[in-house]
Length: 500
Image (spheres, one colour):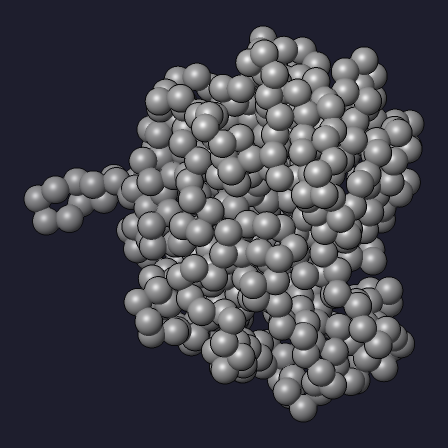
């Protein structure tokens, strides 16, 4: 039995902790805040409750596998997962609207043809077939296996783009923006594509063509909601850890990783406490450097950790509404800004654009005080705190007003129904997760402009990393996968090659 210390109680860290405890190790988690879940948080007030992190789940099989491998009770016995149908409603800049059924390619094709005109559905359906090819080529190396030592091969574009003739040249799409213009050939279909990228904190203007896998995952595996909010999934994972005898220490800030005889030996906490451990599962690689001063954790041949503030964050607006939710209201609506493919670039350049806003209206009595009220969450992807000043109240208020105005295109009369609103910016994300500037990690993507995250093991023996800033990157499902990979590497050693 090894002593394993885990830094942080995020979803990836807890997924690793539960698996390691089942393998017979003594596991203790040290979390600097007072709760678990990382970015999967809940805000409560006056009988209203809101998910302030992810509002929906794709690839629920990741967490089903976690619960199968760590105990007798399956996930569905602890959390009620329901498919959201329609999976999403989309309100485009020209006023066109379409609702897309959950996990039905034929249904999506028919809905797009009816809303956008004959041929639109077929173009989107053909795009999904190409996206499936990219998924098949990258699924194992990007999600299910430890990062390959020859990771450079993953920078080859896996998306089978359609040849595009322009003047005397034939080109293939290398970015999402080029897929939208050259293959989808309809600004509304292009916006539909860009909206999926924005939801993951990926800039559509620079994202590689391989980001086509993001809408494919939703269409292929469905979109799911946990009754009581996605925070219930975090609760279930935490409670599974506790039942597997994982120790949790909250309010315990780690200030150093100890080293002895060339390998990890434990942790030092901010109050001076020394924790002995044979193995340490760390936090984001960028921040981990500060805990191991004077040592390089990644070599020249490894994927270098990006500075966290190079990535994007989120503004989340929690709205407490008077009046009941309409019976035909859709769980998620995406309201597009005038330039979704460029809105993040415009933001950074100083001209704050009208944002693309995701409007979540769960039909869940657990989130409202009674049937005469409704809780709604608005989310927009934005530059993080080091690229835009989210500490100024006037900046926050102005941007929040824009988000509410956009959401009113999906929910007429919204402003008149607001009892109060709570705004969460990248400032809150930094406070809750420790990520520099409140950035949110994107998923790993192949291709020349894709983002790969550092491997789950480091150059210091006994030190591993789990969570969104490590392989395979950000996203609720990806965090669960990182936990599985870390547990496999610790239990089986460097020969571990992922689940078969």
